[in-house]
Image (tube, rainbow, N blue to C red; front, top):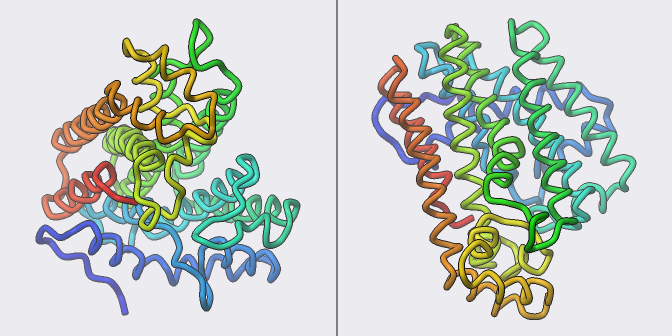
Length: 333
């Protein structure tokens, strides 16, 4: 059944569900064209198959479809962009799990644990190549995707290097460095999804570029919300242990903001003790780290909304886009 996007204001879950319904067949067809072993691993990474937990939220594919609709085209026009960004997102997650040593994803073994590191790298490369091939005939599509990927890799590199820097002193990670990292690691692909959809829908490049910037702001807000959940989220909802990010020593925005406060000196000592994460989490909150992260997320969402409001977008799609973007910074998982 073909998904029909409604003009009236709907919830984010409806927007995501309808996008999945429209994109899933095309995504499955693209994956089926891979070598059978690679297709099997790709299906595993997407969470397809009996007994598997459903794949990710589908935010990027929904953004691509809304990008097309927002400039006056049918949602179906954005499907190639939606498939491409889903493939690239899956590729990035496969490699992230290997780099971070994460052994589980979606409450089952990560692909590299289930199939081996080499096969997982190969599967990720295959997804990336497939995404490029899908956009090969889209004017400006590969250039847009390659730019987003370059920013994503820079953000990932910074994120990895942050872990080797001290918690305090002149070499410590600053909140501004964090923002740049988050825009690359998370925001670049969200912006790319919106811009690809707009290009496929026939929008001029300035409109696509503005949508790209809006998506990047939303991506920073999404990452900030993820940081808050990584410390204070409910494990039964997030699937992650309480204080996991603190235990792993991740440089997240709430911690960086708290370290910059007058109580930062007390906090740096706790961060070096993995068995004191509960105390560290309490001190981060008391020092204003949680509030600072949420405030920063709201600021980036306001910037995204301002960009959208300054464009001549189709009202119904623009409303759904606002709803979806707002949900990124206000979530429990």
